[in-house]
Length: 207
Image (cartoon, rainbow, N blue to C red; front, side, top):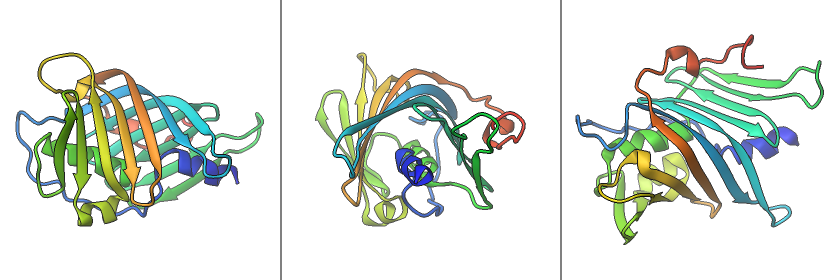
């Protein structure tokens, strides 16, 4: 039961399938890599109450993501172009945590971030509409939505001037089944030198 609950928490509800992002430019909206702390919120279908989790995220283009929930309970999702790991920490010290490994990569969250290489202009993957000066709504094409499970994404920017990825402080994901998840980012930093080891599960260091 615990495994199912946390699987829902990490917005990984759809099958792992590749998504073609296409050509990128030197002035791409999405940095080559970034790291940040996050707060995640969603409404539980069972209780109807708001649930929160806190953790940290690291991403490197293309197809590499490390998403770690630190509290209330530690959960770790790692994916790269060839492998995906999902780990849940044990309830008690000395017990063995739950680990699943799949020899396929580029899961749903990675597809979403990869797609942002397209920037804040409408493109074949999604259309962009500004509801407010600092709020962009991305509506995914039917094909993209079916692959990722995400119908819309709302990006809220802080600060002034040009809209840059590092200015995002909220990402709201609206799934095709109606589920809504809000990710609040903090201490977001560009980091193009994240090593491959960050995106490989280590039995020694990650348990």
